[in-house]
Length: 74
Image (cartoon, rainbow, N blue to C red; front, side, top):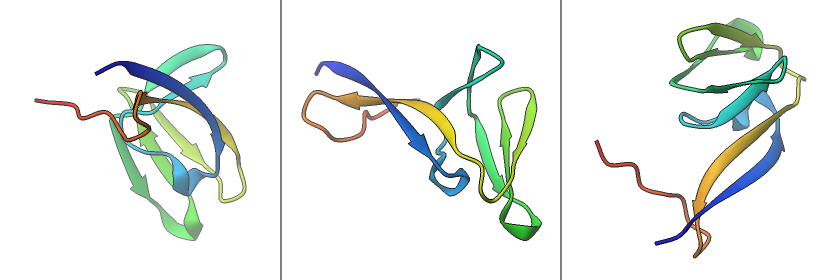
């Protein structure tokens, strides 16, 4: 199965685990997403980032060639 990387612009509630976000031009793979008060999101990859309710962020997401999400085996 071929992997395709898709770049999207999403609101904080659209960020998922395993997405890659760029902060200051440095890519970070999101390991954990938690909801905080007032609809803020806390993203963690070893570093912690907090996104406000109306922030938009560009994410890169792996997709398979058929259009569905890529399964990550542990």
